[in-house]
Image (cartoon, rainbow, N blue to C red; front, side):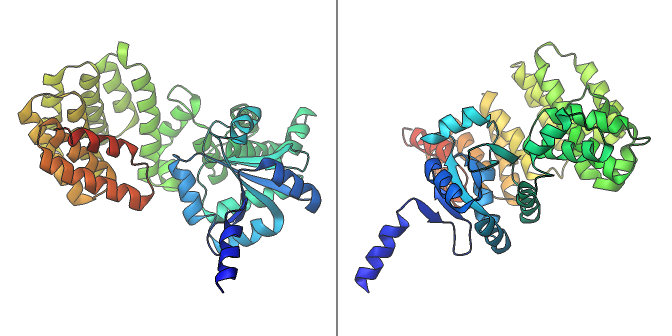
Length: 388
């Protein structure tokens, strides 16, 4: 029995690893081995292009690659390879195939040519759909590239091709999607609204204005929270990228033209606090933050944590820092996690209070490790606290 156990341990250290009892059977960081196996078995290679610090990569490991239906399908249909993009063969792979987001999922034939790809966290059902498309020559990105180059402009093909490009994170999706939408008399059906929501990339593009003008339809399709988050994210990207030369009243106008009055006022208030923080105007930053928390008593944990972290970064007034500690504790009471506990530790550290700083930093470290988050910054904070 001991001899058998030793053999099993040695086998587990070989190149091929098993992710969980029912997980995808991956080859670990050995592209040459995957290519050899794919040739021998006449299979496509599925490559999980990941980094060790990528949160969504870890989520795929934990909840998707371990899913029984996913594992069964991928183990039967593909040679599966995990490839770290920051070491060994991964560096060359990343540059050769233009991997610029994590996780990225590439499907290669036995000759090492990409036939299909996807990107970002995907729940099991969607991930299975991606895998099935990789096996279908009519839906593989390589085949669709050829059809498009040969002049295929059938609306349904353009729609499918756009969807594939979006899945792969390919910027060509914007061009093909625009061609498809030009063939449509209206954009207000469910299929086209979903495509518009995926294509919108900036505050300045026509899709943004369409979503704002038809906000009620998009809310019916996606819900208020998702629509507001999408619009807010695009506005934020626009404003923060221009913050150095920004006029505050112009920013207020953008929010007013996008959202109902109450939502516009609240969103602008958050931006205004960040604006004064960026301008290093501590007095106005503190003043606006205090007024904001007073006006909106039921802020979520993330907003409270963000305000507190802003004080840690740029505010020196001890009274204001103590106020931020209160906000942070309120955030923790709503949802204790590695982010707000780390913020609380940092605030105590800035005030020179070693004991509570160390207590909350250790708590942050514990929560980060439990959730699989990167805890290196908290580790550095602990080292700084211990020097007090």
